Image (cartoon, rainbow, N blue to C red):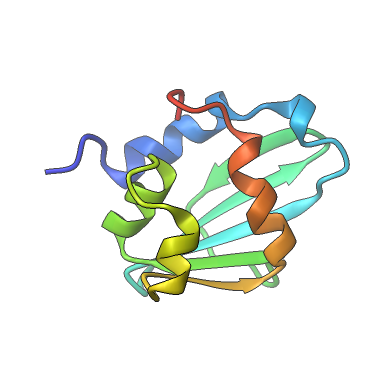
Length: 109
């Protein structure tokens, strides 16, 4: 059983957000979990919001199983290794993906 459910983890993302590191970023990051559930992280004006919805045209889309997303977000699975092994698929702005983890304080989400 995971330490956190995805719902618990996603609820903590806004608290872990570091607005000072998000200057100039205006983006929607779509998570597609187990091909059936959608989470949307919106970063705009140095704020962060998380909702359960499907975006019309996100800047970045991450697709993986719930466990793999949790493992990447908690640092148990390296994001680049997850992509290279096919456990995490990305579509869109890869540059944003590389910045994404640095926008959040570890241990708070």
